[in-house]
Image (cartoon, rainbow, N blue to C red; front, side, top):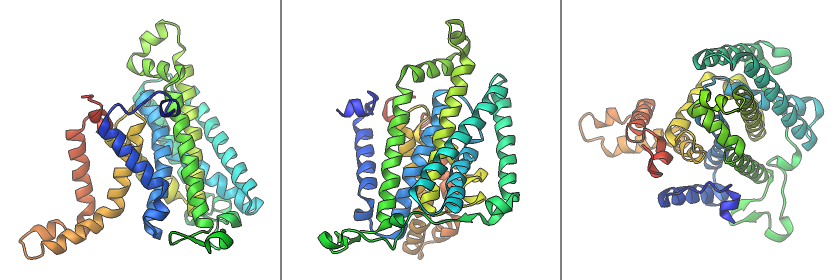
Length: 356
């Protein structure tokens, strides 16, 4: 049953099974295990970025395609939901239409980029995607009459997804295990369920004949071409699929934040973070997206707090309080990344599976 759900791609490591089970359990019951605005927000971001990073791993890890336009597709999906919700009203139909338009637009743009540039060498394709992504980011920032410019757009989601919406008043007195049964809880489980479905869909794709051909092209595109596979066709198809899923992840992000802006969806910082998460988790594994995103977002959100505690514990010692100052959390985040690459060159998942 589990093997079928995971498309036959089992973790193949007891430690990895344990880690994935712990992450799944914590995300599935996050509002009840860790009640609080910050912790639930962290869990929702992990769910969304698992999908985003997994969609990028389809390109980089399985297809060997280096692209810097992934945040562009992410932003297109987010803006699609924001614009339809602004003009169509706060209904679920606006969310569905916006997500559909965003995914379709992202796939169409990826098709154009792929057809015109995937025939060139990898480094030139990467530069082309970087140029297009930068141009789109500037366009969204400048087109203030439609996109809100640098200020972005704040929009309303359906009332059932708002914190003012209450349910379970008769059966549970509006609370379950101390957690308020409101629209925010429904929004979280919408994010969690949608992210899980998209991730399982990607897992199915990479373990299908299409995914195996994609891996063969990654290993040796000349040999794949020689035995009859149309390399450009598979690369373009993978690019379009990855873009569409990234746009859907952006739609979920917009629904969760109820806001979209250039800094939250289109910045190069997000693209760099995606690359870091893929490398930390392990390229070409899919499960690496889960591990990499969880480790990175937890470090990003709680490393500064942890360092503050450690600095307070060592305040009587020389040098250590200064080194562990919360203001230096980015330095230590960089150190942790370097150590992870050094000790886990194939990523955490690759190391746990015995890969070098």
